[in-house]
Amino acid sequence: MFIKKFLKKWTFQCFFMGAALISLIISVAAGLNGCANKEVPKIKVGMGEAIITPQNPVGVPMAGYSRKGPSTGVHDDLYARSLVIEGEDGASVVLMTVALVNLNGPISLEGIRAGIKEKTGIPENNILISCTHTHSGPSIWGAGEEYQKFVQDRCVESAVNAWETRVPGRIGTGSTVCLDLGKNDRRMEYGGLHPDPEVAIIKVEDARGKLIGVAFNYGCHPSTLDLHNLEFTEDWPYYSIKGIKEKIGDDVWVAYYQSAQGDVKVGYTAELSAVGAEMGIRNFWYAEHKGRMMIDPVVNALPNITTSGNPVIKTARMVSDFPLREEYPITAKEAERRDDTAKKRLADIEKNADSYGKRVLDRARVDVFLTGLALGCAKWVETHPNPEPLSMEQMAIRIGDAVFVTFPNEVFTEIGLAVKERS
Image 1 (cartoon, one colour):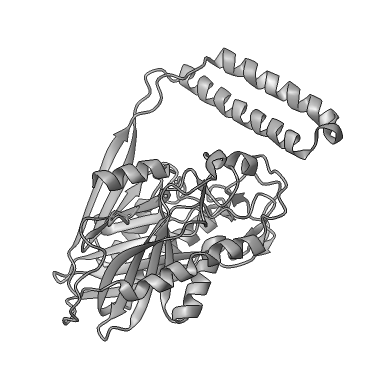
Image 2 (cartoon, one colour; image 1 turned 90 degrees about the horizontal axis):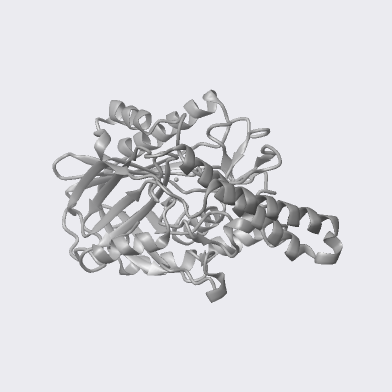
């Protein structure tokens, strides 16, 4: 999340700890532009990336939906991308973004951090790791130990590459807006307007003022494609990154950091996605259409972002106890009754699907999906009285007058907005 106002599962959204989804929010305390003079840089900057696409890309379980089958190939490669900033005092920070739906369980964030520290000396507390939350990547749990180790090693490699290629440079932050890429899928009846269309931008230059890196931060699910897609892809961010490079130079490092996006998709509800509703528009043409919406806003904002060769660089990291549910609106018995009713209605509609039509059938499937979720929650609450809180991590990295804050979980944009406003 961006708090310049720039400040998405350990996605920070920049992160999701238990299920490491990471969303990023950035907040800006002062103006959007940095220092205007081109002083001799006192910081060093470096950027790196490494491909994390499965080396044997056919037959791998995919994440993001309950798909009918494993992967069939690769549309575009998945990446771990890292930005390293070394301050005047020699202390460095890493901002990493990983093109996976989340990082959890088998892949240890601490393992990635330990690997980076071993090869660069950067302290674990200075390494922020987040996920883009693409719904067309491999399942970390299902891909196996070999792939899990591969991802961990490649994440380390992306940060080490950034460290080893760092040069004296300047960095600045700013923001723009992208109104129509993301839609609030819980408010479609109001037009689905994005509750926070701000796009945070990080601009990186070398000592001569040459543009060498651009990162953008925006809350929106990379889920233009649905569970019927079986090819690996970064989804719409792939086309944004590709298009930005086409305009500013293919040698410029470009990365996407997810922001608070639990309720923001690309034009349809999460429930329809979950039940696999057939929507022909959800194809790579649509992914490109959405991704290209980000290109001009980012590129046009770059000239107005002033960089500094000596910004304040600070980090903070803490673990907080997040309470779990102690009660639920309905009992497990009532939830089971509602689930049975929804299933019977769906069965009746399926018997006469031609009479009811596709939309009614989709709605009935969504009802079963939702009553099933409610039943699971109600049962969990009844079988876990007085649950222990869940300890999860959050991080913040300050770059000049901008702060990047991570969230453990797929938080809604309303939460991100509240953080911005209170900042």
